[in-house]
Length: 298
Image 1: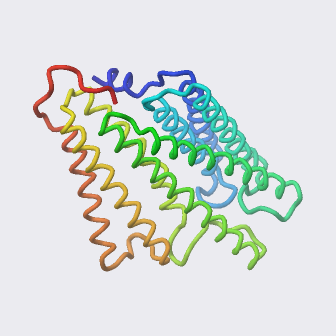
Image 2: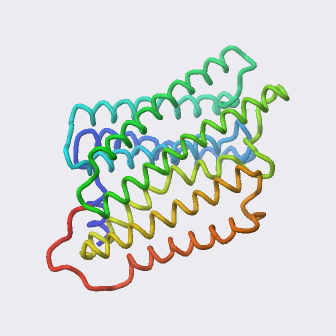
Image 3: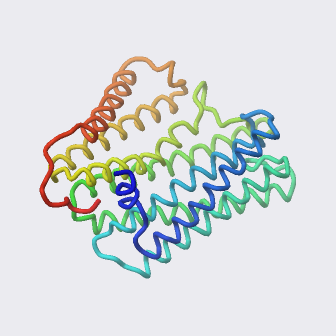
């Protein structure tokens, strides 16, 4: 069953394979830098720690694969457009993550480090690559809204995941502004971008990694040959729950409250959203009636 699920998640077209192989490269980078960290040690936190190439390599690997997964589910393949988006995302993400890793090896902060001309140039180039990445993701979202997947469960997974990512892009811009304000006020690189007691990257990370969870749930439901109604129910529950968690994380961060310090209605929102995600997971794994024919491919 595990191999069948992996087959569901594997890339099918050339653009998706380009993104998948780039994802493999950065997944290996994450493992390599984790090994370096295990040998070299040092603090996990901080603007120049080994955490940065580990986390960014892994995050981009997951996002690269997810973009390819979306491209494979478009109802009207447009090879030229898909190819442009895939190569633009693969190249820009490679430059971005490569520069972050390079700065760590140099013992220099990658973000908000503008004191020296060379470091400022690196940060400027990173800003340009983020602009390209953002443009690709926005174009992909617009493409999905114009030509959504025909299967309703897949439509929920793809659209919900890309909406979350679009939210993450906005949060990322806010983080840049917070970091720049810190540099302007103190003349130093922030250890972590904070807003009050809240770490800004918390909702940013959540926003970018819901689509991978949706893809896995959908693949499992498809391999288990659940009918279209149950698959749709699972995806609706998962997407609504995840977007609820993202809303909770974003609101608490904007008001400057650490997650465990949340009060009032945000606690209810967080709990209810978490319950919805658990329900979606149970519904996916719980035995139930299956269709005789294989359901529409996720």
